[in-house]
Amino acid sequence: MDEEEILAEDEGHPANLQNENPQIVSDVFSTVTGVLQQYGWFIVLGCLILLYIRSKLKPAYNQMKRKAEESRDKKIDPEVAQSRLEAMERARQRLQEQHDAKASQYMEKQLQKEEEKRQTKIEEWENLQQGKAYRSKIKPREENAETPKGLKPKPKLRDSDYNPLMGGGGGGASYRPSRRTGGGGGG
Image 1 (cartoon, one colour):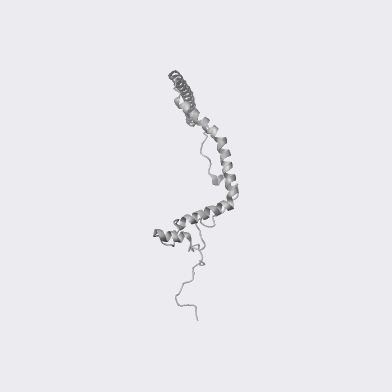
Image 2 (tube, helix red, strand yellow; image 1 turned 45 degrees about the horizontal axis):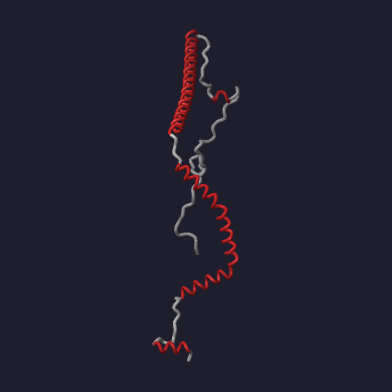
Protein backbone atom coordinates (compact mmCIF):
# COMPACT_ATOMS: atom_id res chain seq x y z
CA MET A 1 0.00 0.00 0.00
CA ASP A 2 0.86 3.54 -0.66
CA GLU A 3 1.62 6.04 2.11
CA GLU A 4 -1.36 8.23 1.17
CA GLU A 5 -3.71 5.27 1.35
CA ILE A 6 -2.34 4.34 4.73
CA LEU A 7 -2.72 7.86 6.02
CA ALA A 8 -6.23 8.07 4.58
CA GLU A 9 -7.25 4.84 6.30
CA ASP A 10 -5.77 5.99 9.59
CA GLU A 11 -7.72 9.22 9.59
CA GLY A 12 -10.98 7.53 8.71
CA HIS A 13 -11.20 8.70 5.11
CA PRO A 14 -11.88 6.30 2.35
CA ALA A 15 -8.89 5.33 0.26
CA ASN A 16 -10.68 6.38 -2.94
CA LEU A 17 -10.06 10.09 -3.48
CA GLN A 18 -12.34 12.17 -5.74
CA ASN A 19 -11.60 15.27 -7.77
CA GLU A 20 -12.85 18.40 -6.02
CA ASN A 21 -13.00 20.42 -9.25
CA PRO A 22 -16.19 19.95 -11.24
CA GLN A 23 -16.02 18.82 -14.86
CA ILE A 24 -16.94 22.27 -16.25
CA VAL A 25 -13.93 23.91 -14.57
CA SER A 26 -11.53 21.43 -16.07
CA ASP A 27 -13.22 21.80 -19.50
CA VAL A 28 -12.90 25.58 -19.39
CA PHE A 29 -9.28 25.33 -18.29
CA SER A 30 -8.42 22.93 -21.10
CA THR A 31 -10.22 25.14 -23.65
CA VAL A 32 -8.39 28.26 -22.49
CA THR A 33 -5.02 26.56 -22.58
CA GLY A 34 -5.78 25.16 -26.04
CA VAL A 35 -6.71 28.64 -27.35
CA LEU A 36 -3.58 30.15 -25.80
CA GLN A 37 -1.40 27.46 -27.32
CA GLN A 38 -2.91 27.92 -30.74
CA TYR A 39 -3.45 31.71 -30.87
CA GLY A 40 -1.11 32.96 -28.13
CA TRP A 41 1.06 35.15 -30.33
CA PHE A 42 -1.97 36.77 -31.96
CA ILE A 43 -3.47 37.56 -28.57
CA VAL A 44 -0.20 39.06 -27.32
CA LEU A 45 0.16 41.10 -30.51
CA GLY A 46 -3.48 42.30 -30.21
CA CYS A 47 -2.92 43.37 -26.59
CA LEU A 48 0.20 45.30 -27.57
CA ILE A 49 -1.65 47.09 -30.36
CA LEU A 50 -4.49 48.00 -28.00
CA LEU A 51 -2.02 49.39 -25.46
CA TYR A 52 -0.32 51.46 -28.17
CA ILE A 53 -3.64 52.87 -29.38
CA ARG A 54 -4.67 53.65 -25.81
CA SER A 55 -1.42 55.51 -25.18
CA LYS A 56 -1.98 57.63 -28.30
CA LEU A 57 -5.64 58.40 -27.63
CA LYS A 58 -5.48 59.03 -23.89
CA PRO A 59 -3.83 62.50 -24.12
CA ALA A 60 -6.42 63.66 -26.65
CA TYR A 61 -9.23 62.32 -24.47
CA ASN A 62 -7.81 64.05 -21.38
CA GLN A 63 -7.48 67.31 -23.31
CA MET A 64 -11.09 67.15 -24.50
CA LYS A 65 -12.24 66.39 -20.97
CA ARG A 66 -10.26 69.33 -19.58
CA LYS A 67 -11.68 71.72 -22.19
CA ALA A 68 -15.21 70.58 -21.41
CA GLU A 69 -14.65 71.21 -17.70
CA GLU A 70 -13.14 74.63 -18.41
CA SER A 71 -16.03 75.67 -20.62
CA ARG A 72 -18.49 74.42 -18.01
CA ASP A 73 -16.69 76.29 -15.24
CA LYS A 74 -16.29 79.44 -17.30
CA LYS A 75 -18.83 82.06 -16.32
CA ILE A 76 -20.80 83.79 -19.07
CA ASP A 77 -20.18 87.51 -19.13
CA PRO A 78 -23.57 89.29 -19.02
CA GLU A 79 -22.33 92.22 -21.13
CA VAL A 80 -21.11 89.91 -23.89
CA ALA A 81 -24.37 87.97 -23.83
CA GLN A 82 -26.39 91.22 -24.01
CA SER A 83 -24.33 92.50 -26.95
CA ARG A 84 -24.86 89.19 -28.80
CA LEU A 85 -28.61 89.38 -28.24
CA GLU A 86 -28.71 92.96 -29.50
CA ALA A 87 -26.71 92.02 -32.62
CA MET A 88 -29.08 89.14 -33.32
CA GLU A 89 -32.09 91.45 -32.94
CA ARG A 90 -30.56 94.01 -35.34
CA ALA A 91 -29.92 91.25 -37.90
CA ARG A 92 -33.52 90.06 -37.56
CA GLN A 93 -34.85 93.58 -38.06
CA ARG A 94 -32.65 94.06 -41.13
CA LEU A 95 -33.94 90.81 -42.66
CA GLN A 96 -37.53 91.78 -41.88
CA GLU A 97 -37.05 95.15 -43.58
CA GLN A 98 -35.62 93.43 -46.68
CA HIS A 99 -38.58 91.07 -46.75
CA ASP A 100 -41.06 93.91 -46.37
CA ALA A 101 -39.40 95.84 -49.21
CA LYS A 102 -39.55 92.84 -51.54
CA ALA A 103 -43.18 92.23 -50.60
CA SER A 104 -44.12 95.83 -51.35
CA GLN A 105 -42.33 95.68 -54.74
CA TYR A 106 -44.21 92.49 -55.59
CA MET A 107 -47.53 94.07 -54.64
CA GLU A 108 -46.75 97.13 -56.79
CA LYS A 109 -45.99 94.86 -59.77
CA GLN A 110 -49.23 92.96 -59.24
CA LEU A 111 -51.24 96.20 -59.08
CA GLN A 112 -49.50 97.42 -62.22
CA LYS A 113 -50.37 94.19 -64.09
CA GLU A 114 -53.98 94.42 -62.98
CA GLU A 115 -54.14 98.04 -64.13
CA GLU A 116 -52.71 97.07 -67.55
CA LYS A 117 -55.31 94.30 -67.90
CA ARG A 118 -58.08 96.71 -66.97
CA GLN A 119 -56.82 99.27 -69.52
CA THR A 120 -56.69 96.66 -72.31
CA LYS A 121 -60.24 95.56 -71.50
CA ILE A 122 -61.43 99.17 -71.60
CA GLU A 123 -59.70 99.73 -74.96
CA GLU A 124 -61.22 96.55 -76.39
CA TRP A 125 -64.68 97.58 -75.20
CA GLU A 126 -64.28 101.05 -76.73
CA ASN A 127 -63.07 99.51 -80.02
CA LEU A 128 -66.06 97.20 -80.02
CA GLN A 129 -68.43 100.12 -79.39
CA GLN A 130 -66.86 102.14 -82.21
CA GLY A 131 -67.04 99.19 -84.60
CA LYS A 132 -63.30 98.88 -84.98
CA ALA A 133 -61.59 95.55 -85.29
CA TYR A 134 -62.06 93.35 -82.31
CA ARG A 135 -59.21 91.06 -81.46
CA SER A 136 -60.53 87.91 -79.85
CA LYS A 137 -58.36 86.18 -77.30
CA ILE A 138 -60.06 82.87 -77.97
CA LYS A 139 -58.03 80.55 -80.20
CA PRO A 140 -59.71 79.31 -83.37
CA ARG A 141 -61.04 75.77 -83.37
CA GLU A 142 -58.31 73.21 -83.82
CA GLU A 143 -60.21 71.19 -86.43
CA ASN A 144 -60.39 74.11 -88.83
CA ALA A 145 -56.75 74.97 -88.31
CA GLU A 146 -55.52 71.41 -88.92
CA THR A 147 -57.36 70.63 -92.16
CA PRO A 148 -56.06 72.40 -95.24
CA LYS A 149 -58.52 73.69 -97.81
CA GLY A 150 -60.05 71.09 -100.05
CA LEU A 151 -59.24 68.09 -97.82
CA LYS A 152 -61.83 66.49 -95.68
CA PRO A 153 -60.97 65.27 -92.20
CA LYS A 154 -60.48 61.52 -91.91
CA PRO A 155 -63.45 59.69 -90.52
CA LYS A 156 -63.08 58.05 -87.16
CA LEU A 157 -62.63 54.31 -87.68
CA ARG A 158 -63.33 52.92 -84.23
CA ASP A 159 -64.25 54.15 -80.81
CA SER A 160 -61.39 54.66 -78.41
CA ASP A 161 -62.80 52.06 -76.05
CA TYR A 162 -62.92 49.35 -78.77
CA ASN A 163 -61.64 45.93 -77.74
CA PRO A 164 -61.84 43.14 -80.33
CA LEU A 165 -62.10 40.47 -77.66
CA MET A 166 -65.21 41.98 -76.18
CA GLY A 167 -67.29 41.89 -79.34
CA GLY A 168 -69.81 44.55 -80.26
CA GLY A 169 -67.62 45.96 -83.00
CA GLY A 170 -70.15 45.45 -85.76
CA GLY A 171 -70.31 42.52 -88.12
CA GLY A 172 -71.00 39.00 -87.04
CA ALA A 173 -67.50 38.02 -85.99
CA SER A 174 -66.74 38.30 -82.32
CA TYR A 175 -64.67 36.18 -80.03
CA ARG A 176 -66.43 33.81 -77.68
CA PRO A 177 -64.51 31.32 -75.58
CA SER A 178 -65.53 27.68 -75.91
CA ARG A 179 -67.87 26.24 -73.33
CA ARG A 180 -66.36 24.13 -70.67
CA THR A 181 -68.11 20.86 -70.25
CA GLY A 182 -67.51 18.55 -67.35
CA GLY A 183 -67.65 15.25 -69.18
CA GLY A 184 -65.23 15.44 -72.06
CA GLY A 185 -61.85 14.12 -72.98
CA GLY A 186 -60.69 10.85 -71.61
CA GLY A 187 -60.87 7.37 -72.86
